[in-house]
Amino acid sequence: MIAVFGGTFDPFHFGHLKLIRHCMKYLQPDELRLLPCYQPVHKSAAHGPVEHRLAILRLAISELPAHWAQKCVIDEREIKSSQPVYTYESMLSMRAEIGNDESLVFVMGADSLQSFHNWGHWREILDLVHLAVFARPRYSLEQMSPFLQNQLQHRQTFSVSDLSQKPAGSIWVDDTLAADVSSTELRTQSGPRKEWLSDKIRAYIDAHHLYNDSK
Image (cartoon, rainbow, N blue to C red; front, side, top):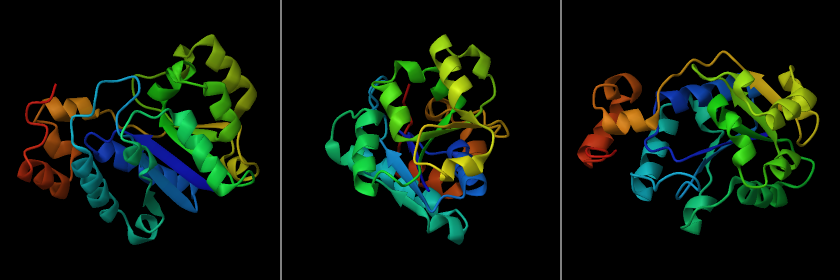
């Protein structure tokens, strides 16, 4: 199984790290690909320069237990594109690389699932990957659109082992993750940084004067 966790990581924080730990604990992938984007398709441009976001991501991986860190790979395909890339395009490219039989699991928070029907080619994405959804406070699956409610009804599996039995098409939901923080809050408020950023990452951000005036 290959798991994929994409995002702007602007900056990477303990909420991201906690999700990675949940991935490793519950999904037990052979590989976890961290997929930083160059620029979000539906959001404003990233505040942190690419080279710094990548450096912070490497620092974060180094803080994982060694047996997990060695399974983490930073996939730079979207970064190298130097333009916004749709998730569908990245998953199509990745599927072509690994073949049609490998289990490919795209990891997301419940907030992303709620807007998933607005993603480009979202139905086709479900033909390329499984979804592993980690619930966040304040986000309820009952708030999803009727389109996604229907998809969840037909695709949801309650056994994570099912994700390894076929290459794509299922949705698995974990509701034990309770990380209620956003990168936006960390960019605009210095207070939460001590709570949500490791000493190494906070020192790196301070040394390079990042996120001091971001909104």
